[in-house]
Image (tube, rainbow, N blue to C red; front, side, top):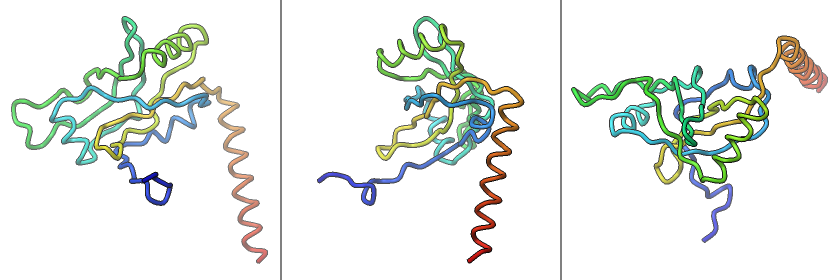
Length: 159
């Protein structure tokens, strides 16, 4: 049976990086798996993660996620993980080659947008290729958003 948008299972979002759209111009997004320990998965299921300061880097032809904070599992005991350890990102080889080329040649950044559990129960991270915005670009975006909000408010009051 084919899954339609109405019958498709929902993914459970653990952490969002709301600041990423403000700081970066998003060019392309990718879905990547994460190499995690058991205590990290349990902590993620409790919703205890922060990816606001995280970023992706290339090391020896592999992609890594740095500064992603996954809080230690409360009942983990002595086998708990380090909260901000470096985690390997899992992508297809052709996607990795494409990202490495973009990061090295074009001077783009690899930014995590969302950390979530896929319907299959596997932890995934949505990564984006982004170009850093200048201060004037951020101001223009805020002005456009405010203007759209004012227009919508005016249209609502007209009814």
